[in-house]
Length: 536
Image (tube, rainbow, N blue to C red):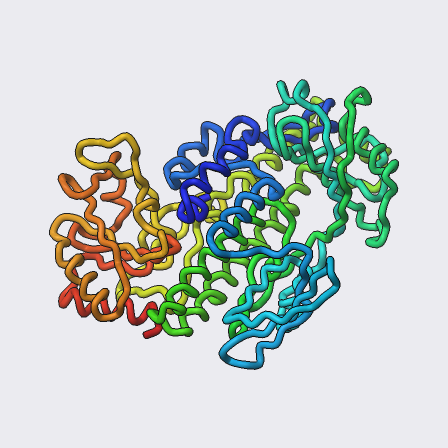
């Protein structure tokens, strides 16, 4: 959402109108059926008394529940209106990247059965998990064993009455006391549109052949079992099968070809990191391409795209798959891991025992559900990336801050170069109607420098950079009586530099460099820093 907010506030507003930010996404549940017994629930996606403040403190944006089918038309319309024509019914056949100055792509019009050649400065391989671009480039891939096969069942069913007491956007349906078909050992029910459109994800049992595809009637029978109420009318819209991947490319780029999105990092939908990571890939690459094309940066800047984002992609793949595995303590506590129904029923009954064994089992169930917060409240893995590349400049002696004890759950904002710019609300001394975030002043395709009292020389230095390198750096003063003031005073701590120091922010809202205090020969220093970042 921060990337889309930076792209255009109107895009963020449209996404907010289409998506859901309230109680619809407030809980994750474990249950026997949608209408039946609930085993437990936890707060999710930045909600709940324990964590809501953490999420509110770190971003001007909120979690939005929005399916890709609704988000893509918004982005497609924006792209089309801003000079990026989009062709449907067209597929990439092959490309030739042998010339160092351009890429020649051959595409097929699948309607008229004709082929065309397109000469391009760059080729972006954002063509999904079966990427033609990645295959032809022969990018090396790190592939872990698959965690199985799953079936996506998109359907319409009015569950509004059930959701009055079962509010939540994710429901893990586990039936230890019933025999399930091989194509649906257990299921996840995900809200698409409250409360009438849903995605039921059915997990194949380990022994089910990968090539097996159940009939429509078999799928409908299983959907009815998942619902647990035969009176609920169900309309199945489509059924798709997919592989639970744990795959990441070892590098994302080669020459003038850059790959991003699911083409280079493939994983289950746990943690909601799919589209988010794809958008962040694009945000990282876009400003670098722009500066190289303007002649401000050298092509070496583009090498930092793969360096920075590959590490993030690898972490996302690992985290999403770990989150899937972390549900197994819940399954074990419910007795679900036994192969026979009889043994599962006996094990499930331990939860009702008035005994040490019963107490231990009930605690294991509760602990297992709470541990799943590493999927649903993983602020650290969402926001705690630290880039390491030549597009980051660090002064000698500027030591990295320690990570939180649980770096998956918790995010601690810092201005250490390579970290995401901390969010703080700003306003003028005489408050205006709308507060601004530090992230609202930064971005917009340009570098930004924040300073405070005594930092006037930084503005002069920025003008020197403009004259020397033909690069604009916007300078903002934040402090008592200055251009902007921190509404709650938090920026003065978050900036981690003296009032006359500075925080230099890249166009993608990551900290490029900071000076803990006013630098000697400040204009020459800023030019030196920028040359290093731009590869000049």
